[in-house]
Every structure is written in C-alpha cells, then in structure tokens.
Image (cartoon, rainbow, N blue to C red; front, side, top):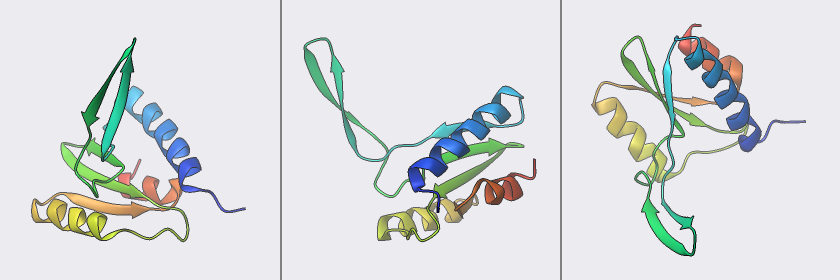
Amino acid sequence: MKESEADLKRTVTDYLEYQQNAGKLLYFRLNAGDFIELRGNTRRRVKGCMAGTSDLEIIKDGKPIFIELKSARGKTSSAQNAFKILVEEQGASYSIVRSLEELEKILRI
C-alpha cells in the first residue's frame, strides 16, 4: 500500500520533531490560505502563507531548505512551481520529498 500525503506529513513531522529536540535543526510547518479560528463564541479569519508555499521550512546549518511533501504520484500545482522559483532565486534550497528516506538524504543526518 502506498503512503498517502497525509501519512507522509505525519511521518516527516514526527522525524523532524525528534531531530529538532536533538538540536540538529529547526523546522516550521507552513500553511497556505485562510483559516477560521474559533475563540469562545467568536470567529476570526487568520491569513496563512501565500498560495503555493511549501509544506515545511527547515533551517539546518544556518541554511533554509523548503520541502514540498507529495505522495508517490502527487503533482505540484502552478502556484507551487512559482514558489519554487521564488525560493531558488533567493539562493535557498527547494525539494519535493516523497518518502522519509528522501528527506534523510537531503538533510544528511
């Protein structure tokens, strides 16, 4: 059975949490779009990252690495492709990751 993108996100974030706790890196889960926050009886709209933003940003050895998580057959959107170009124009690293093993190779941990 192939791993879904949601399963991959859980596996990768568990791994990154462990590595962060060990002091090897810093990571952020990025979310694009708008969200509704419920606080008591009130609701408010919270603005997330711009469309196409990668799933994760990892800081390792002082360098930013942006990671887009995809299932084995998942494809990137035009907004995600545009975000990749923006990241690379700034000299940062961008990778599409389809397994924990691919992420481990990128991070060299």
